[in-house]
Image (cartoon, rainbow, N blue to C red; front, side):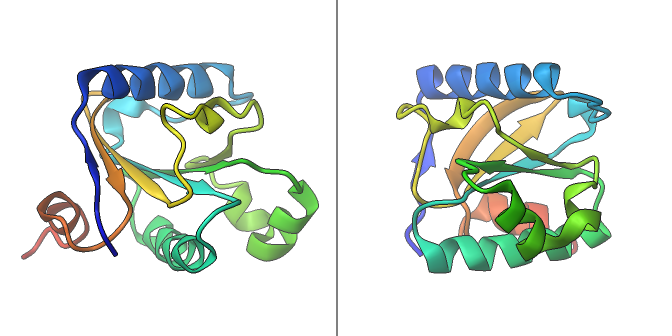
Length: 144
């Protein structure tokens, strides 16, 4: 998978704004962004194979990690999402749905899953979700 890093200051500021807005408007939010190292953005429309692979990896990571959050974006069918992933995953406090479509904004939207790297509650880098970048490898294979 080709990785495209987003280093643009404007785009990073926009991502931070969207992330802050999403979590501030999220009912019953208990996520402390200062403790989150990455947020995985999973669109419900786009590259199906990429989304499936990233979704499975995110599910596996959530079982082991408490420093990674997941946001499902472009959610058109809540029943299908519940059927596909089950209530226990979707009730995990680290999993949320972008029902306001904040991340559907063309300036941040991608048909590919994305990962927003976080430090001290702020996004500092965004790239397509994959396992080839150095940042990704450090986050997901901390012992290497």
